[in-house]
Image 1 (tube, helix red, strand yellow):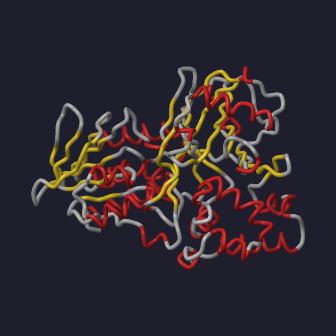
Image 2 (image 1 turned 60 degrees about the vertical axis):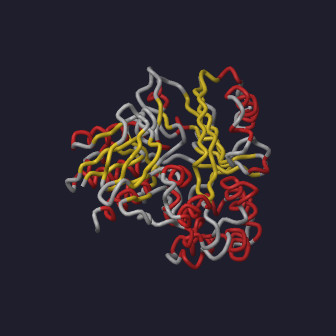
Image 3 (image 1 turned 135 degrees about the vertical axis):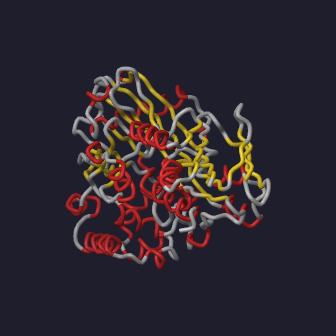
Length: 432
């Protein structure tokens, strides 16, 4: 078959890999000038490694991602350091990335509160029954079973940070279950950074005969006849006909690209909710965290203008970045938030003073360079009984398929599940 894939993120590249292995003719269209999607990165001339635009890592349980890497023969290039994650409490940052550190966390006190917290966490870790959990919000389930103190101290700030005031009380408990089930304290990356992996993967695909067209945004998809889909591609190459098309972009982009989809399917796409992300990357002259902490989780009510600070060079050594100390400052926000309109300089004015609360010695003069990255589509919002809202990969239009991070539910978004849904889409396209 002659197949088009829209989007050269991890889902699109993974689908292209399986389809090409099966002997199909595959063309990948990508609007950007690089592959990798939301996991793409950038690199300064004096850096050995790239830095992701939006912080990424793998978990040891990411079997789909690591399985693909095994197939490609690159497992020796995967690294799994053990960084330290901390949570802000009572004016200090406390370790909170293992069972022991959670049990020792002072915010939970002692006695019944800590026991309830431990039992609820253990249940979520061991249970596989996410469908019964999606009937409840995180708010109501955690208050009932983990207890008010544990919920208010630990989990409510996490959910509020991810989904904001508007959605945090509507998010279903299956989302929280997935975090317990699929995440590990040890975090992984690829030698050279995620962009190095995406580039190597794209190069392998090209060697296999896959055509990857960069700076080739697709304007629309329409049905030309019973045998092929006609793609209108906004490049000098014009349009091309394909027997099958897989779109791996956001639900909104899919709806805009394929307006001839049935009304019900289009409405379902447009009703899916998501949060955007604003991430500032800083190159500092010296280390921010004197304790060597990697990830700072910060409650919204703590008065910081951001959700998380991630010192990447406490995960990957600064020597990989020419001695620069790389720090991410990020937040999940609704696309209407003012942070999507402010300039980089204006955001720096908002963000930098708060870094003194992490290191009192910090000065704005430490900043060598800054990069601002924003996306309106970063975190799907799973409401109660969300499984009923997920659009099928195979759309009502014969030959047209859709695979996005909004469909990996109950799992949370990430490259591991992008690989899984991309490969599942490829199976459907081949009739498996």
